[in-house]
Length: 335
Image 1 (cartoon, rainbow, N blue to C red):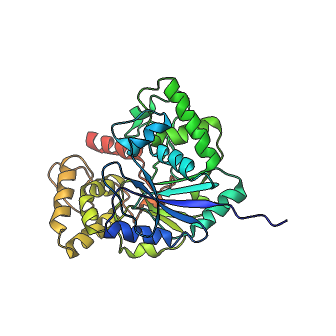
Image 2 (tube, rainbow, N blue to C red):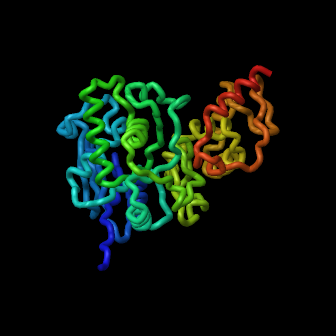
Image 3 (tube, one colour):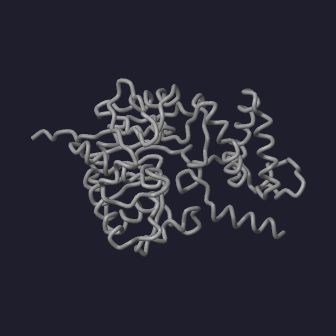
């Protein structure tokens, strides 16, 4: 008996549509052979024209039909609602792979679906951690589970079964009056662990050397040619410039000196070197570590060893360990 291939759908999540978004959609669609490719368009505030791509349209107001609490930050806070809506509007798939518009993959996505199917797993994830010390830790306090987790959700890869179980669990929280209403980045992993949804770390099948909520990569970065990888955030020049200050803090507090130098070099060649220089100076004066060999008044000494570490060198899969960074900065400040 020949076993049929599993059915999967790739959801490119769009909040607007411009040349950059179209390029990112085309890049993801090119990796979606053997799967259906659909734009999940948040049309709460604007119409999102998606060209020749199929569209799953939703609005925050329209998702009230799910019968779940709304949040002032809409679907950004409740990304799992988008998965419930996808399963409702597109019920004929076994696997749903949703990506932020600034994610880039260099692996054939059908391989991920085949892997999930063969491994009999319902969730592929990356950077699963305990909520203690997380910036949104309070958003997890409404969860009734003893083991509370969080995970960045730039990419969400779930089976239809897992989506339905998570939706049931959300309704249980609503019925129990969960307060505060849990952020999706802690709800999905915490609920999945609590109810026993089988999961596998994505790094069993791909690399994530440059994947972090804090990271900024220009879309022409030559490292994006590396195969079998997942990247975030891949940006055009205007969006990259907007993320400069956040990226500076990421590099300084994590000791990612090579990444900082790469950004400085890129900025200088594109006419905004002064912006990066000022961002570094401001961050150092605010308590971030100074880059090696540079002296700033009231600066925190550079962390050692600086080495040539990249975000992906961390064992947790790519995002800096905030607890370790904070402890080190406190120690250096005390000295």
